[in-house]
Image (cartoon, rainbow, N blue to C red; front, side):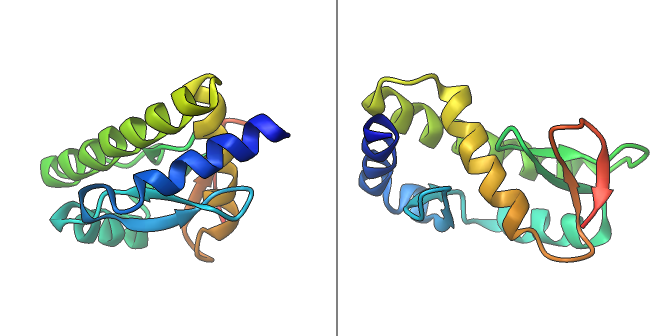
Length: 128
């Protein structure tokens, strides 16, 4: 548990990565992620049901959807920024990036708005 607290404490140092907005992690501290035109594009695609949050901490394309190139690019941009933040925080806490990302992903699923799609540990997309 102390290691996880160290990890999440390290996240505070990442603060406003790329001018990012904050997303809450499992222990209530904050992880920065991208805020740019990508965020607006992604938010709209989430509202349309094209993409959603996944338990692994990243955005993904909902099965059966075919988002535009702009949406795919924006999603990739945010995922790259998330991975950078996860990697930095995980290395400071001496844990694997995937572990940190999944802890954050679990919190993102819990925070997802009703009516949006999430992909949980079952590996299936479902509407929240």
